[in-house]
Length: 165
Image 1 (cartoon, helix red, strand yellow):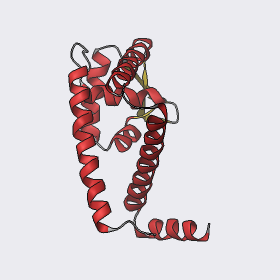
Image 2 (cartoon, one colour; image 1 turned 45 degrees about the horizontal axis):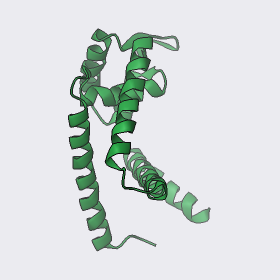
Image 3 (cartoon, one colour; image 1 turned 90 degrees about the horizontal axis):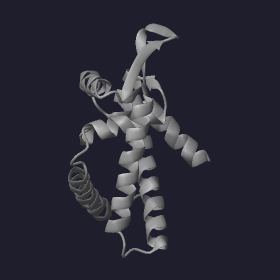
């Protein structure tokens, strides 16, 4: 069953409000951390696994030149390193250094503590349900974006797979 237009409109408003709130919290909690908000996002994705910069750019939804500047800045801070891709000498793999892993752990620890403080009047059940719904929303949006980027044939195939179970 499709989502009604007024419900979709309300979701859009709520998502924008959430983005704005998260941005405000992130900016206020980034003071004193040399890696700014954008660099922290790149650091998190690099921390998931060593990968090519082109793959990271696609996952982050930024252009290769933008990501290249972020990687260079993180490299200058000693938080990431690049090495030639053994499968393709023209490409480079990007990964966290030990200092990068420690910095990412510190940033995430700080964010967790901040969120716990901000949500101190929430129940554990409210937080778990919210995490579950946000995860489902994120996955649906990612799948739709991938299908759209892949073109109409992939979208039609995906719908048929979903319908046929």
